Amino acid sequence: MIKRIASRLSHEWLFLISAFFAILTFVVVRKNPVSFLGSDQIRVLWILLIMMTINAGLKETGVLDYWGIHLISRSRDIRLLSILLLVLTAILAPLVTNDVTLLVIVPLTISVAKRSNFDPMWLVILESVVANGMSSFTPFGNPQNIYIYTHYQSPVIEFMLEVGLFSAIALAIAIVTIFFVKNKPVSRVSRIVTLQKQWWMYLLLLFLMIASILRFGDIFVVGSFILVYVILSDRKLLLGVDYFLLGTFIAFFILSGEISSMTWLQNLSTFLNNGRNVFLTSALLSQIISNVPSAIVVSAFTNLWKPLLLGVSVGGFGTLVGSLANIIAFSIYKKDFKSNYLKYFHLYSIPLFLGMLALFSFF
Image 1 (spheres, rainbow, N blue to C red):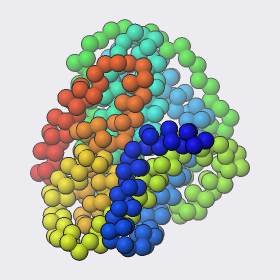
Image 2 (image 1 turned 135 degrees about the vertical axis):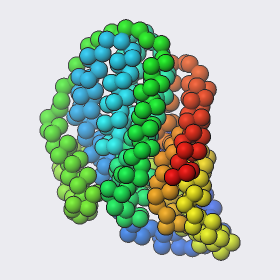
Image 3 (image 1 turned 90 degrees about the vertical axis):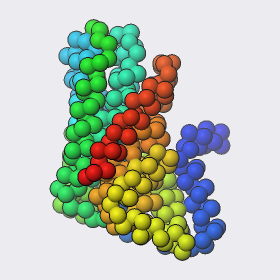
Image 4 (image 1 turned 30 degrees about the vertical axis):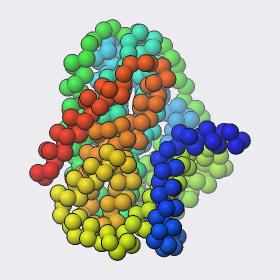
């Protein structure tokens, strides 16, 4: 048991780093850490818990794999396969988060690539680009969006309009890029996926939770109903929840709270009273600590949610650590292929980041 925990912790570097700095700032500032876990923070943690539980149900019952296989079974070459997979990624990411989307799409891509004898490096890179870009479009498409939407009580339509152009550009760039990748025929997908019993229930639960997130119902009432249903019908799904992600959020809530209470940092609020400064700070900080914690830390010093949202969205590009989704895609790919993924990822992603940074600095 101890070895298993130690092995898991060795892969949860973001959780360990965030926990370390949360403890460090607590020792320095000595503010009660519980005081930084208010109603907004509890709402974010609750939404993440319920969404991850539903996503585990969708994966367990084969819903995502079923439709993915049906879609790509009509592919005749790498180019068409790639376009279909990118479109599927674009459809799923705003609904079930970028992380879950890549956990479904990348293994599917690897499976087809191995059967057809081609290296899907560029396709996996582009899938991570689309997942990050399109997940930014909805308030529940990724963890940082859930946090910003909940923390600032952002209007839904205004939220989506703010990042709509960014998401569209990311998708368009990825699809155009695929036409420059070498094309060849692919083998038809012979894998058969059968939908498990009550698969439709998890789709219904997803729509109910999305409605409550969009303020058409109480998230705690709806979420409690979902949790009770899962406990009674399939409690092992709760093992599929990423509790380390929840722990990372808690650590960064405490860290950002402790930091914001440091008197010598109060001038940051003045600096971050400018939209462009918020955008640039959050985007650049994401390159170092990832866009989820960047959103939490910067939010402690500004009320300007629009440039923050755009900044952490753009920040998902650039370095591999810009988004946890990037790390997920890479970790799945490297198990079966040995190409220099990191080199080509950064050769593509960093110019993309810089281009987006320059473009949206003027919005």
